[in-house]
Length: 360
Figure 1 (tube, rainbow, N blue to C red):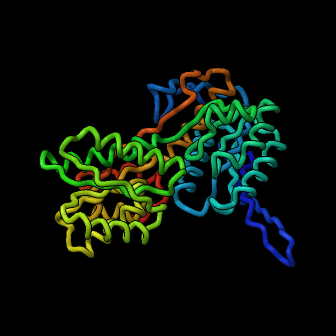
Figure 2: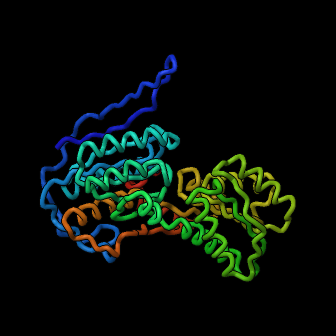
Figure 3: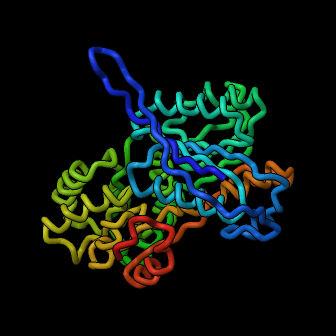
């Protein structure tokens, strides 16, 4: 079997003309076997049994980019599922998460290759809608994997059929972090705030919603507000510094991701209030894991991006074999809180799934 990792690089601009470039990795051989007849590796109770593929299905997987660990982890999940189940997978990606037009062009090229099924991680909720409509017209099943979401309304409006959506519950990300902090503060509670991501983005808005919903469950917590940190570490540090000055009794900060959390923690440290204010993050990036280990961030909530990709391939096989349960049109991948008490064990447990944990 030939296996390609295809990545369209950003156009070079020379004399006003854009010159697209692409490359393919060296070929590898996957085991020449077709296996199955086993329960889903990560969600056996929900997904159930993965049938033995009746052929070597060709599946195209489009990621946002491959320039950070998150998407490399997803790539590894796709590739390990390919080896496990004996399907043929090609992985594509845009040069960066800003290259919305290039990602659409890549998907157009993928559709022309007539894959049996495609998995897509759109950069935005809208940038690949036209291409997905073409895929639907050609009866190519589509799985929406992670992050940007092709909503039922968008599907209906643009004539798109999404067979399944595999993701994490962004609202639950912040619910878990807020719940953990509330339990750490105990009956005393106190003032708490949220530094959100970029307003308008799905992850940012959902995490804001999850935070507000969870805070409302604890009468001892007083929400003093939500500030937009735009996923930026410096901006989040400045916001936290200002709020610490105006609210000297602040007890906790929930960051929308680890970057905002780490920025907020720096402000707490600068103010000499590390014994008063708890700071939580989300995503389990390497810097945040080290911070938790060092008794700085109180916790982080990991994505299970590797598992998301792996589960997407299991679902793809079920779809292609006519064994997919329509109840699984939305699949929410497991998540949990990593804190000082469990983080060393978690790093050891998940080391093979997270590229960023290799050096721990």
